[in-house]
Image (tube, rainbow over all chains, first blue to last red; front, side):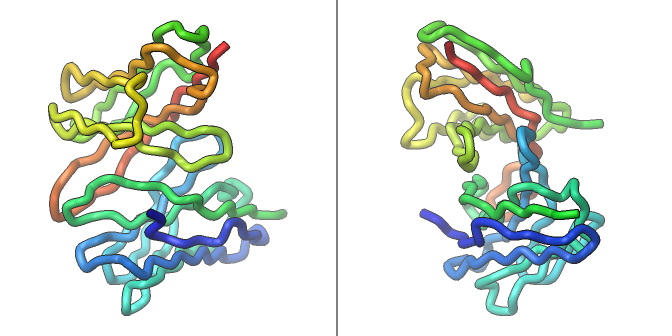
Length: 110
Length: 115
């Protein structure tokens, strides 16, 4: 069962902000939203996660809507090295497993 | 740096010949996972160990087995690899918990080729 919906692909110009949306309308109260990315031929890399408050770290910001049914990952100044597949995953509570959906292929263009 | 290490990075095996992939971690995480990722697809969970307890996904073929001799190491055994088992195999770890999920740390993966 797909618990998240993401666009298949997005483009972004180098140096601009990349805003990646994710819908998770069936999220339950104790589930977190996780974002991972996977650069070609590498293992997935953790980016950020949140429950209901917006979060920021050195890599990105995560904006979660008040009803928690959607979120946006923001890469503030995208570089060519940010080209990757970005996965939005909902998990938590009694479920500690990460189930990957199809993700969004973000291409950062010069 | 604490990390998850997978060896080898690339593995070639013959059709039907048993092969073992290894994963080690220095994070002292109690949960270890094995994912299979075929070309252009998302990673798919095969099974995981929560401490010493083995948890198989319902659709994981019997051809795939796993061993975890201690906290640091976990092995993926493919008893009789077929051409369809060619994929990237990813190992991941986490600090498991019922109420909070700390996220996973992944290794770089082992790319398996079956000839």
